[in-house]
Image 1 (cartoon, helix red, strand yellow):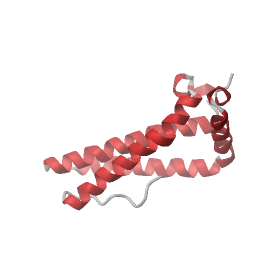
Image 2: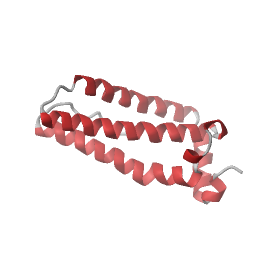
Image 3: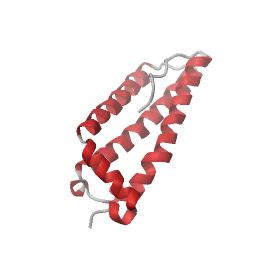
Length: 129
């Protein structure tokens, strides 16, 4: 999903790394995840009606959103000089969730490719009837 985890620290380089990684997460959402989410309509359908690849898409979307929010929260708390211990634990949990989803994506690579191919053909093809 992203490169090496941003170093956690209140120094300017550490804060810049946290904010930069949050910006990368937001760009990933805007550029790649939201177009597929919108094309498939997965957020408007019952979860039990989703394919395995669509469930992974929703999980990844939510995990990247959570990661971006946690990165931004961590940076803000550091700027304030607040205690970041709880924030760091939640950030680490979000990071682990992203890696778990990557592993699941690798296991379901064929299904994910099929979903993306359907999206490439147009939103109507991507949505099951």
